[in-house]
Length: 341
Ligand code: 0TT
Ligand code: SF4
Image (cartoon, rainbow, N blue to C red):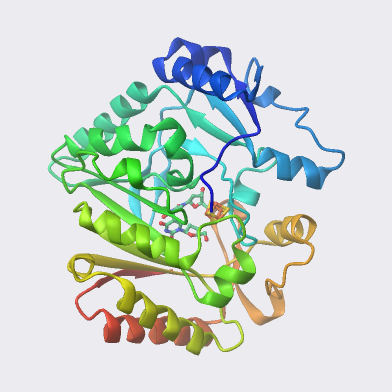
């Protein structure tokens, strides 16, 4: 898996008021990538492609260099108190990805260059809660690691949070491109998580991401660099032979992970969910996908603002939870399971 390189770059004029904006412009000029100026990211239209599907595919290799205007952070339960905005969008093509609905018709990748303003806002949130710890999730709207070899904004965030007493950072990735993050002064304040799944789920539903082995190899490096390490097992899917599939996942994980990576380990478990809107979008964008989204076989869970979603029925969700918990208990008895949702 090669590190992401955009095919087309848009720059919002305000972005050039910031050092990172100017640096990125120069970087892509040198690489010879086509650069277009735009007045605002809402003006990013005309993404090439002769139909919607092609435009969607091209958007996923388009990078917008922009300024984050709202410095009010969203909440991010259950993984953290707040979502820290560094980027939106992702180069991956996971069929089940919730960004397909949450980002609406803006599937391009957008990175924010006004980092000092974002860090000031984070500092305010930390201060309000002190002496309580405040956790920031950097992976709510993007896979930031997959992009960071270009921007290093995650690296700067890691170092910024590393300097705080009560701030913590966490993010999750499916990419192996972690080398530049290994020497970041994280001070133990960042939990570096990798998304893992059964072989079936990774092969069927996660095109455009690093392989299982690549992710675990990267996880070993991250643990060696003394980051607290975690795994998100998501989405948990009851596919054919799922019990064997997930058993094999934990068995392989245990066998490959070096010993030092096992001493401070967390797991987060998220069952597959979808909305009606998501189902429609997925069927358009990945028409051959075998992702199972049969409303009759699911339970409807009411959500805020009428945005309900379909999850597994209680009995099936319980079985899923207990099975996975027992595998973790067996292979990683010292690890902490943070939640099942
Ligand atoms: O499969 C998507 C589901 O996974 C969502 O319901 C959020 C959840 N999730 C994602 C989670 O439980 N833990 C994580 O660490 C996440 C990777 C990050 C996250 C995102 C989160 O913890 N809490 C959230 O509220 N989100 C937001 O959910 C981001 C986005 O706006 C929204 C999508 O439902
Ligand atoms: Fe979505 Fe994560 Fe896959 Fe990117 S890697 S497409 S953010 S699920």
